[in-house]
Image 1 (tube, rainbow, N blue to C red):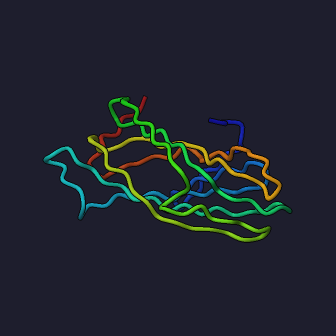
Image 2: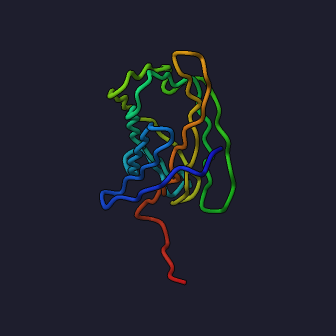
Length: 143
């Protein structure tokens, strides 16, 4: 997974990374109606916007996520496309989708990468910025 992309944290609780003129912005949110804290189930949704700011058409062909819960346990998720699609992004176009992740802890972190491909068939990786999953049940401490 590439970590060389510049990261931005925005005031609206979204995170952005740009790799090879592909901008990925993630906005997570806690889903209290789907969560059951008494059963150690905390559900988060996240909306991802992918914008092609480059000059060539690209396709998102696969994803790789690392989901780290509040106890440091890591789950890796790999698969083709996103939400059952492998979107094509011509220059200047964007693609937005929403997905989710359950955690056994009230907070965690997600980070990942998309495998993209140019029209010419050249593969390249695009960073998905690390972002926090935080519920109101998370205990915050200052160090």
